[in-house]
Length: 368
Image (cartoon, rainbow, N blue to C red; front, side):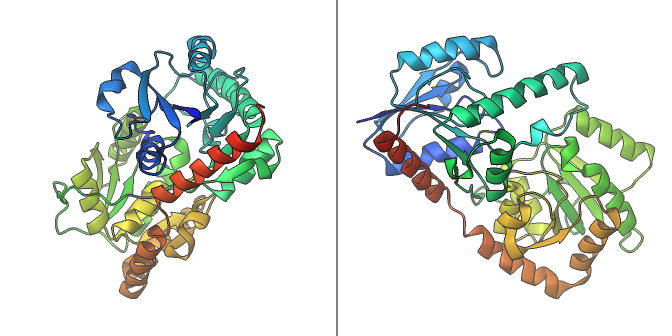
């Protein structure tokens, strides 16, 4: 029996879907290896492993700290692993054992965030560039969620693409009953779900919405996601310009999210940079026609089920959304294609491919 340590410190955060689903299905398919799962001490009680070969290990070392670089390295060494899987790039950069690293995308390296102190953010961004490049080079294998990110990481870190394995993510059906969002029942609306950081391109989406209002005066734009300083800034600008029918929901429940997907006229994804684009795939699974940016990994993941536009071209964005609003035939075909596209992806497959990487490394390679 081999011992595998999985760094799951992000398990119960908004970024933790990947590692949560991976662990769920690894417990289904692997009863041979011994897994030590690193969790924040406050998260240990909230994760109950279903497999007897999986153990939750409290890990007090926070991301992007000296404690992570020194204390986490010692803690991992004390567990005597045969392999460590870091589910994100942040990790002890001088750990010398066998490592698999999942790099979800390089977006953080390329876009600023006005919600953060610019000097502090710039410093952290430079440190993160060093970390990503080093861990990509020292890892025995790198996992990414798309071919686009695979090629992007290979070029950025200067490593052989053959060292990188693509393990696509997947969308899960929301099982909570649909719960209507107040003020939207019976209205025609567009939905966006997610963060409001600059690369999400919401300012251009709002401009496209303003252009559409000339032809669809009753149309509503729903921006759903946890409120933060970026959302506050955008909402203030919308109010100052007296743009009507833009609704900022804040955090929505799973039932409300399902209802938004199932009842929107279209799900619009204007992002400038993504590693996989899970929200759009989730929208497809729930029967929403998806109108999407044509950049980075999105055409790869959505295939012919997406209706695309140049995210830097506001008139093109408005025209693409207008095409879907004005053609029931197009809308119906996108809904059918979207359901088929979403069904191509499976978290079980992700886990099986990841386990195959573990087995290959444990059986054939020496530490990096």
